Amino acid sequence: MSNQIPLFELTLFEKLNNHEPTASSELYQYVVKEKKILALYENLYKDLDKEDIWTIVTDSILNLTEVPNKYIPEKGTSLINFIKMDIEGDLKNLRDKQIRNKNKFIDVELSESNGNRDIDYDTPEIKIVHKEITNRLTEAVNSIFGNELDRHLAWLILDEERKTEVFAKILNLEQLPKLEQEREVKRHKDRIKKRLERSNISIILCLSYCIYLVKREERKDKDL
Image 1: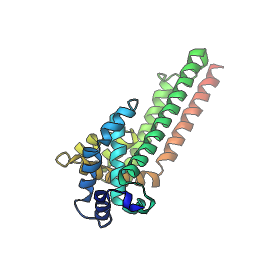
Image 2 (image 1 turned 120 degrees about the horizontal axis):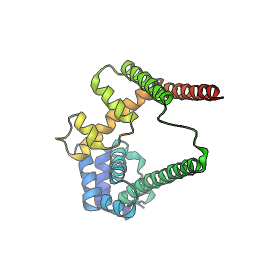
Image 3 (image 1 turned 180 degrees about the vertical axis):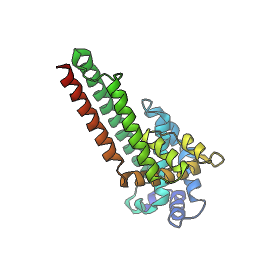
Image 4 (image 1 turned 90 degrees about the vertical axis):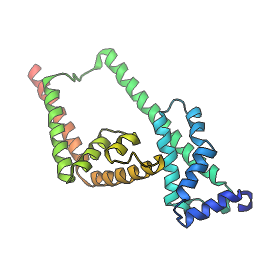
């Protein structure tokens, strides 16, 4: 079945399996430059941010570079089609997630427009709670990460920053080719995320929300 796959792809796959130094750049050149995958999905998914599409495309390339044996030529699927299926799955998941988030936002907006809004974000109480949350997160981040660079990266992740160039600038990677930037940024982000996941950041956020709820109830009691 693998004889249906272009010889170039089989040769490239062999290089990936052998972890040859030029394999990842050759794969990038083939997928992005020759097959114009990035331009294809930017056209098909115009509702998605181009930076998100770029991240998904490069993540697919990097993941295959790191774990090439997840592609099995014997199944008869060409390398480019395998990568396209991987990319399309992630793009559809991202689109579905954004639609769900948009629907939630609409539900909140409708609820507020119907007079059901019960949170005033500009009250002294909310400002105090926000300050407490910030202070607790700052203490947690400072205790988890011993150097300023890692702390900066952690705050970007907590702020849901996604642009590769933002991280690349902080990490002084701007002189590298974009794929290499993506690889290094991903490595650093994965490292920071693992440390955050092992920490009590999520617990801190939950406790902070509980503080907000308690203060809101206290305010209601005072108004009675």
